[in-house]
Image (cartoon, rainbow, N blue to C red; front, side):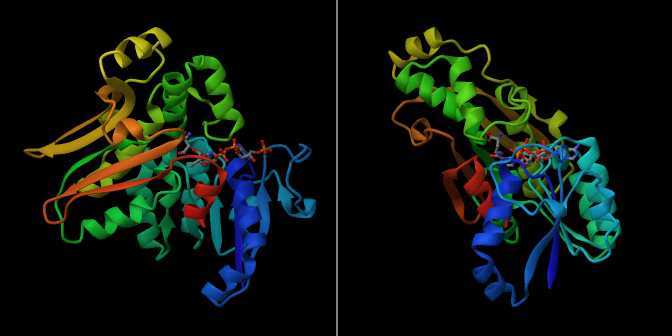
Length: 309
Ligand code: NAP
Ligand code: HSE
């Protein structure tokens, strides 16, 4: 039996609960073991939830889970930085494997958490922390076995891509479209992280750490968001055959990292310009394989949950 402790039961946490219930048979066939979520951390035990969960497994005390000797795997999907960092660290030290979708924690503590995991002979896995449903961490880890990565480029935030796409195609209002992205479960708990570009910068830091084998955190990524882009700007540049996208870019030149996330004007007929809705695209350039492009849903319950599980 594999026992799982879930930290968080929001958009992603409820997706995990549903998949581990609905697809139990397939997961157990693959692992050859029974798999069960035995405890779930939430902030508010009395909240109305649109998911049916046995209330007796809910707790508002993280240590009920982290200190439970019977739990094998901690899945952290609560968001934030300081608290989840503390819990992940302690869980690894307590001999538990950790799976997390938390790019905010990873973009500051990836190196340290990886070291603790190695020392404890446990795994920390974070596929869903970058680009929602796209299995980009796996692809990148396979690529670096043979390739020097010369460039990473892409649209790494679903919320801002959704907003910019809707403002371009349907002339919608910024605030209303952000509200819609929140309702659809794409945005961070504090959507400032999305619209100011911090979320994409964190993802770029994680990819860069792996690709360039060095410690990279959010402060190493120059970052500008989309809050200064008006409907007028979008309409104006459209007349000249351009569209605006929040693009990330990272490369290393003479051992100096150059990494940015910023709104960029691109040819409206290019592949990137046509990445709509909350989709993401990631381009990885390797010296042997050349350019590879990965495309898919970049945010939301189902794609993220799929990648995480
Ligand atoms: P969310 O909907 O806000 O859910 C957060 C959950 O964690 C809630 O159940 C909340 O409890 C619980 N929680 C938060 N702080 C807590 C605390 N201090 N103590 C106890 N419980 C706490 O967030 P989400 O969208 O699922 O995102 C979760 C994580 O996944 C974040 O790190 C996010 O960046 C990442 N992620 C999200 C997506 C996406 O598309 N949404 C995609 C990739 C990665 P209550 O329910 O009681 O409030
Ligand atoms: N808020 C994030 C986004 C969730 O919109 O891309 C997926 O990481």
